[in-house]
Length: 394
Ligand SMILES: *Cc1c(COP(=O)(O)O)cnc(C)c1O
Image (cartoon, rainbow, N blue to C red):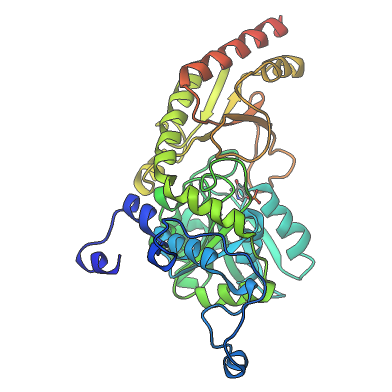
């Protein structure tokens, strides 16, 4: 890799294939194996006392975790990456790397709800105050900054409702005021939104979603720019909140095909979102790549693609009619999380917890994660659901 780097930067697809692998350090085998272990032996008393070894203890990293951290750092355009056992623990680690008692943080009203719970139930107890802001604010966020504000936390598009934030405008304000910006970048991944190039300090990825791609692991990653990496790494070492080696291995395996799967998720997502937007039962589709969605212009300016997760607002229907639609679906499963190979749908309601924006859809709100099934089969499954909905409404 290093020789090539000198000539011309590699494209993302090439990096995904080669990053973090050293076959001849493991007898020529292509993939970095799963290293398990707590104890690492030292060669001598002097080495032990000086901790003179590449690997010093299980919680401080193994060749397997190194491979994923190195690869992700390259893909994210970061200075370094640390791993966490879930996306939510990555959120907590990033925030705790940047705040202390008495601080204030600004958090987008559209964040993943458990991030909000962490702020309201844990940070509050530790003496850190949270203000939720309208994700549409952009540079106007400056008006909310106090003398003790330390962090601006962003998520774009927003969880469930897909608001697009003006990251460059917010990052410019944060840089001027010397604040830390933390972005939950799970939807886009660094392939569709390179976070640090947009001035973000700490970027979170729930590897549970597209990096896994198979709904069979939990993982989080936090990448940092040069300025924030020492604080992030120090917090990681203090917590020793490590993912298991098998999950790290599976994430590395997923990494190699991430671009292929994301591009297909984009194609499938757009096909279904477009089809749904033409259905008479649908009031609105929330998908930033559709031209009539708010935030579309910023999405086009900043993003390189869209993934397969979006939402719709149905026109008003009764609860039994909604149940008839959902319960008879044969290809769409109902369950939390997303980004796997199979299609999912869940109903959601943000009206009970959002505080800086109003959530008032005309009818039920549904979030779809479109998988790799044939889109014609998915449309037929939904069309049959709409037929059941119509009969149940009569
Ligand atoms: C799922 C998700 C998380 C949390 O990931 P887990 O691994 O399930 O803890 C964080 N942020 C976003 C945007 C998510 O969708």
